Length: 150
Image 1 (spheres, one colour):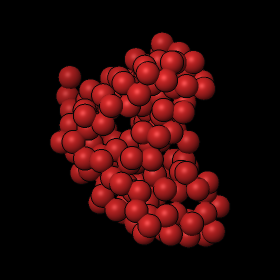
Image 2 (tube, one colour; image 1 turned 120 degrees about the horizontal axis):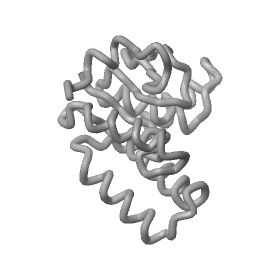
Image 3 (cartoon, rainbow, N blue to C red; image 1 turned 90 degrees about the vertical axis):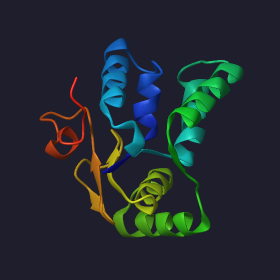
């Protein structure tokens, strides 16, 4: 199953928040089957801004981090005109934010079964993509079934 990552997962992995969330995110990412991980390009742009604003990182460092994530993830999903239109439909019909909608639409476009996000509605399903908060308790059985053993 393909698994898309939202911005907050990467931001936590980069230490934006606290050490506990950083460790949880890094552990989660390390247990995902690398070949199944998908990253919407929108997430890279959002991560850059989070690193600058909340993470107080210099632009050069934020850029380097973005490039590292771009190279580490096998599948990137570009934001197309079709994704933008579908995202606006999500905003209208489900009252989601536009940026979250773009990420969800990109995940659907890439045929993901999961979108890992702390920001979207846990359990929300759209076009075959289930939104899962990987930090929620109890842990999602769907997510647990996709994680590699340690």
